[in-house]
Amino acid sequence: MSAVILPGWAQHIREIFKSGAVNQFIITGNIDDDAPLIADGESRFSPLKIFLTETLFEPIDIILFYDRGKGIRLVKGQEHFFNFLKMFDTFNRSRFSSDSGVFASEKIFDHPGLLPRAPAQAIELIDRFIHHIAALSSPQRSLAVVIDYADFIAPRGEALHLGGEIGANLIKLLDWAKDPAIMTAHIINVLLAENLSDLNAFLVECPFNAKVKIPMPNASELSDYVSFLVRDEAEFTSLCEVDIPTLSQKLAGLSRVNVKTLIWRAVRNHQPITLKYLTDIKKEMIEKEAFDRVEFFQPKRNLDAVAGHEEAKQWLREDAQLLRSGATQALPMGYLVTGRIGTGKTYLIECFAGECGTPFVILKNFREKWVGATEGNLEKIFNILHALGQVVVFVDEADQFAGRRGGGDGDSGLSGRIYGMLAKEMSDTGNRGKILWIFATSRPDLLEADLKRQGRLDVHIPLFPPQNKEGKRALFYAMAKKLKIDIASEELPELPFEEPISGNELEGLLVRAARRYALQPSEKKPFKEILDMVIRDFRPSAHTLILELMDLLAVRECTDDRFLPQRFRSMSIAEVNRRIAEIT
Image (cartoon, rainbow, N blue to C red; front, top):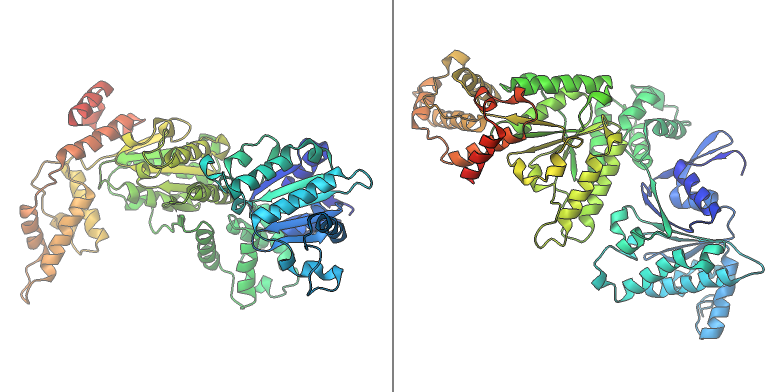
């Protein structure tokens, strides 16, 4: 094939294999997508397995695929494998090469029942064939073995579970990478698995194989793909309200297969491809691809809707401006938003999303009870985040999600592995300005110090309840507007208590007043009068020490004095720590 340009990952495999250094490759990532190829200046796309067969392994004499569902399949060089089976049957008195219902040897591979599907027998037979090819001196044959769904053959698990069939299969796979006879023969073996973390650690950590990750396509690559898809679709131009480069920017984060579905679903149903259609379908597809572990958030308001927290709003507005302008070197890697419950941490960040103009995703519960599933979920999420190009990631109740350095009691080290994966991803400076992390928690002391350090969560923003009457009144009115209660700011009664009161408590007051107002008989008292009664009956939270602890923890974490109320600015760290120790 002349004038062929391979994708980067495929060229990497070819160069390593030609060097003779490694003959086993673990391919992970976007393996279920179409693979690109430029031949004679023209872009072409095909599923990965076809790409391997017809392009990357095109010079190889024998190409064998195996997975637990379909069994052993020969896509090239069937006669060589058939001759091996006849010899194998002769010595072992088996009948792999013949069957009473098959009379033509060339049709033998149309009958998968003739060859074993179960891993123990199939991997054993493939192993015998690999060593047979390796032992041939004249004529030499080249062989490619592709094990699909390799995580079902050598799954992640503890060493004590490797005593049976899984252990035997794992040893054979490792042997294919380490055996000098195989390494020096013209043999390449490939293991396919979506997530590296789904595979057994012995394979992942083996120094004799190479790990290759297929990335999700970026906007430029999607532009080539869209042009390829719609080259014969005359109606596309009239249906799509944006040009192909703009469309591709909007589609970033999707696989090529999902892009194909999105475009053909519209074109073949004569549906206009509007920005709303793109947003809705992309959200649906990415959430499905991430197994609903992420949620795309569509902001309905900006920071103007936040009452109080002026310094925090100013800082976030400035960073939103830097984000929009592309000044990535001036942006933090992430934020830690702290403060007692009810201070509006989540609401503030949701309003910040309305200022950014970039995709905003909420990281949901990615933990699973099955071994390796949680790590696989995280790996999948990271792949999607990278493909989006620029994204803000919000982790609420972060102390429940982020894991612990030493792991948790009784979780088989899962908490520690989660911590390690997050810490590594969050500290990658190549992500600055591309992936902006925001953690929110009322208990920052439960987060590992390494996650909170500069270079991961650089800016720590503490939030506090209103500190004076004016602040309380502004927040009270904001809660009334949120509940769509028709009352003017000057009609709100004075709050008679001096204790700090948070937005959720003020919202509770208004809801109780609205309830009492709605339950009145026909002659209704004015809402203001009922609200006065509710306020007189109100009892502030009894958990004052816990709330004070949350305030002090926020003070301790704060990275800039401008965020602190005056009464906290004068406190030294020693005083703060002393008071925290007294409470706890």
